[in-house]
Image (cartoon, rainbow, N blue to C red; front, side):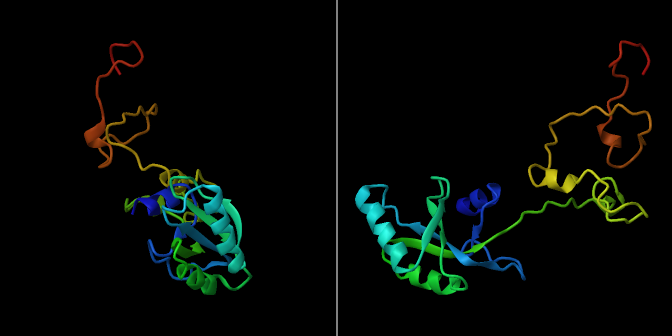
Length: 181
């Protein structure tokens, strides 16, 4: 499970064995992800073994993924990714070979009012211009917040009784060096 989250967090292709890709999410037709077993370390002999295995399957290493993942993105003959996965899996030095699926994490809030908030994701829902928004959902892919973080809203136009704000408003706090706020 840690490998899956590492792939997703780095925006890298997620191995198919870790999760099933969403329907319609195709794999790259000419790329696979290969990880060699732990005993196949970074020695000259082991590199020779890896090159030999890649050569045998028509593979060319495009890049090494971060060391913590220990896998390689390998280019294979066009349209042969599934076939090459099967071939690599039969190699005793290979821990896994997977199609190169690309997964995108989306964090859309469960707020029932979210679809009405055109400033967050404007799809023209209130007659506005689609795309004229702050694309907040992209930030939620990075973090969805922490209740211990305090923010200040410097706006006199809030509804203090709104269900999302009512329990979180600090009253009579002197932010401005005045006795009344």
